[in-house]
Each structure stands twice: as structure tokens, then as C-alpha cells.
Amino acid sequence: MIPITEKFIRTNFINASKKDRTELSLPENFDEVDWDSLDYFGWRDPRIVRRAYAFVPIGGDEVRGILFQQQPPLAKPQLCGWCHDVRMPNDVVFSNAKRSGSSGRNGNTVAVYVCKDFQCSFNVRNDPPSPYDGFDMDAARTSRIAGLGERAAKFAAEL
Image (cartoon, rainbow, N blue to C red; front, top):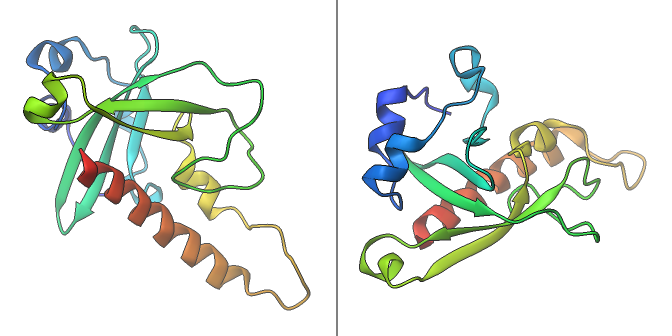
């Protein structure tokens, strides 16, 4: 993930109003983020209930910011639409984002089930369950990391 600053965050959302950008709270550990271990940067707003944000690389040096509204976790666990971690080590929640431009102002949204606290980058780096002897864990991990990036970028492009 390309390191980003607070100024970049407050000016580079594709679906947030000026008021939304002004009201957002950065995560407590923002100055300590290990950007090299992330495929995208996401967090839940500590002050605004059910609001979350993610900054997703979409190719080259371009990064798009997304404002989400998250619903409470369902009783029945869901599979994250971005990391596809079958172990489901954390809550996965329904998260929707307004589309950009006039479509979003008319109430149109795009939604995905995603890890509640955006743990996807951690999940895809853990070894997946080994289905058989001789399974290539490194290739599987590389594939999971690439898949996460592709799915997150595709979601951002839909906005």
C-alpha cells in the first residue's frame, strides 16, 4: 500500500461530501501504520457509529477513498467478499457505499460483505488450510494477496 497522509485522506474520497470528510476521525494508531503490510487501508470511525472508510489502490499510484455505512454483524457468519478467508476469524459485516456523482446523490449504492475492522490484509497473509500433502502454501498466499487487491480495486471502480 502506498503511504498516505491525513491531508490526502481528507481530500481524496470518491463518495464523501465535504462535511463527511471534515467529520471523519483517523484511527488512533495512524502514525504507526505499517504500510508495507497492507493491500488497502481501512478503519471504522471511532466517533460515528457504523461509519467506516477504506483507501484502495486501483492501479499505478492511484488510490481511491471510500466511505462505507456498515450494518451490525449477522448471527450467521458471512464470507468476506474481499479476502475470501474461509476460516472467518473476525466479524464480517454488510457494508454499502454511495456511488459517486449524481447517481450517489440519487441514493444508488454498491455493497459488499467485508471484514468489520478491515483485517483482510492480515487474513490473506496467513497460511490457508492445507487441503493435501504437498500443497504449495507460498503460491496460495501469493494468489490470495493478488485476489484481495483485484476484488477491492474492482469494488472501488464500481463507485
